Image (cartoon, rainbow, N blue to C red; front, side, top):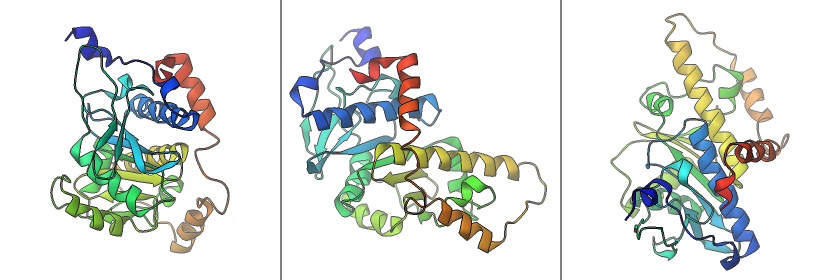
Length: 265
């Protein structure tokens, strides 16, 4: 095993061995990992983003446990099923045998199994998300951005999520929302597409940061009337305007291509 192999997680390109639809999903998912790193929403090799494989409803793509987000490429992603079986696994340079994170499998499989309309799930352990997850008040609708999550879901902490017995409660607590705060743990977003899930997570993270900043100033916060909060929340719903994140995505990919197009390999 070489130092270079450990550093890069380099694998053979899989483009010719998967369908065009799966390859596009792989490219977008690798891009999402790189963007999470770029916008400082990572926790070393921990956490996970998953994408349902197009045309294979019971299978999803997820990161190989052992790679940093800025190393992940389209070809390095694992394909697993709802029972955690690895169906497709790249051969890493140096013979490194990376598997799937157990908690990642449990959390993501729970949502993919229960919600066929959800194709992408993102889970983070950011300092801002974890801080707000410990607050009894939860996320406050005190900015226009945070009002988007005025009906955010909450899931109480009951241990590390490594047992499938936790799946039912996770799904129950998420309900029909696209975002959830895992109390004393972190954040989660779920959406129909990768761009929508990333946009929701970016805005949720920003909401947590602004709340912490405002509360740290030790001054009374302005409370927005409930009817205004509700109207603002409704304006952020995809059926009212447009799915947020879709318009941003091509620009974000151009940004990544300027920095390092290696995510496409």
